[in-house]
Image (spheres, rainbow, N blue to C red):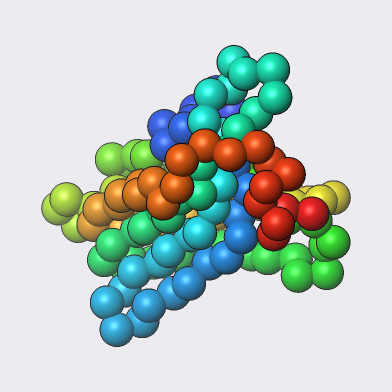
Length: 132
């Protein structure tokens, strides 16, 4: 399976994941995360954000809750076609590569749409108390 090494369609590289919420009544999946504001900065600042997938029909995301570090996104791809998924009109496959301690995970979501919402202005990483 392709791991989309050179892709970062959602600009999530080095974004820390605080939590994942699955809303089964609306078929939404929400990630609360902190995204680097500008990768060119000498000391990265982060923007707390929500990444929401709407109308999720299928998802595949393994987790290892035994790891003692905050997981982070490594790459992302938004695809109109994928060999492993039959898509309905308007659906996309969203691939997320996640670095979680000693493991690398490939997460897939089939969704109608997605949005990225900024919740705060850029702050230094040491001001994000949930990032250990």
